[in-house]
Amino acid sequence: DIYGAQFCYLLAEPEFGNYSDEDARLVLLGTSNQKPFKAFASDDAIIMTEVYEFARSLSDENFFIAPLQRFKFLLAGQMLDCSMQLKCLLYCEQIAKCIVARPDEFDVNFIMKVYGLADRLKFYDPVMEKSYEDNFNNNGVEGVEDPKWLQDLLASVSYTHLRAHETGRNL
Image (cartoon, rainbow, N blue to C red; front, side, top):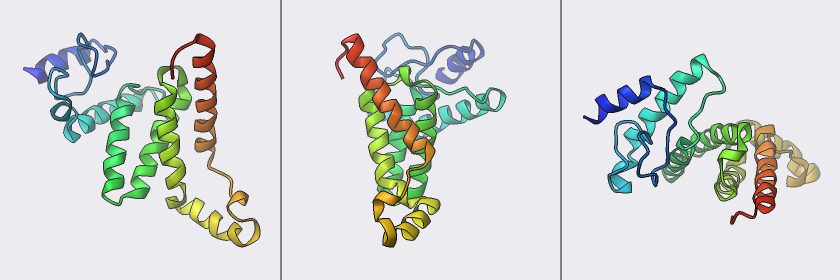
């Protein structure tokens, strides 16, 4: 019984693993990483795990599940496919806050993907859209400053890239 087993694991507050880890006890709630990826990474499983993450963050505002951020990125892509640009951007912002909080837990390629998507979507934010409209006639796009969270995410790309170069890891 996957739900019963995962409930017991949750009580023990284990670390969440990655899909590729064969001995990972928890990756996404309500599913098993023994399933093929498409069956494993269902919207329901991602959202169920996201609800758990949110509930835990209510008592610890710094709590997040690092491996879950990749799955949130998948959901963000699906939102974009459904023309939900602002919701996709808000998901990217939440992922970015996790990356900025603990950049060592993410590889530079993932950070760059999140940054690239968020940078393309930033003008769907009503505040950015207004700034763009106000500055377009005066300074062009260069006069518009990115939101703080997007600037911090870009700094994380640089930090992670530098760290990977220093340790000799492949990007």
